[in-house]
Image (cartoon, rainbow, N blue to C red; front, side, top):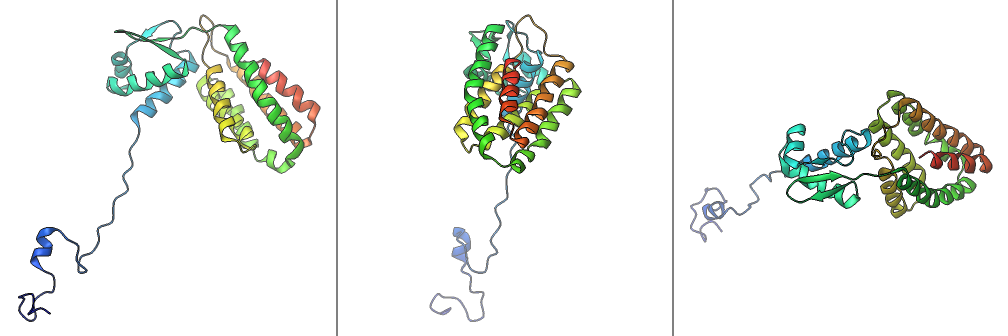
Length: 239
């Protein structure tokens, strides 16, 4: 075989031409493909901007430029602009040509509308689950409810907002409807944005809200449907 290819007896079987062409031969050891992990700067900026909206650090009615916010976060204007465009799609900001993005001013009436829509979506689902799920499934959510209490005690509206939404996502997730969870979570996030001209919720208000989560779980474990419905109404009325 080697003579037919013009290679002297005893020579290495791998052909020089194969190596030049870069073709794989059986004598080569395959190089494993590295796992590349990239951190999304845009995603981090989007999370930071959402937290700033909840905390009231971005003032309703004010216009913010992407370059200025980029300096604030230590990044270029591009990921800020992309994140702001996403917030514009969510209704948190509006584009101001040649200037930047204005934080949308909202009033108590809009907040009440959002709470009403959330109640219409979430309450029937939770009440249905309350009639069917065993107590141990509800008990699994207690760590999330306790996390809302810890976040409330910190007095940080942004931290509480994340914990609050995580708890509600987990409750609705028991229904097995991902579209429902996505829609409800979007409404919930929008309901957490600071109102124009009003201070963000204080630590005491957050702790009252978090206490409802724990009481609601107790009622769900006990399958006390009357208490579940009353607590849900209280929760959404104060949302």
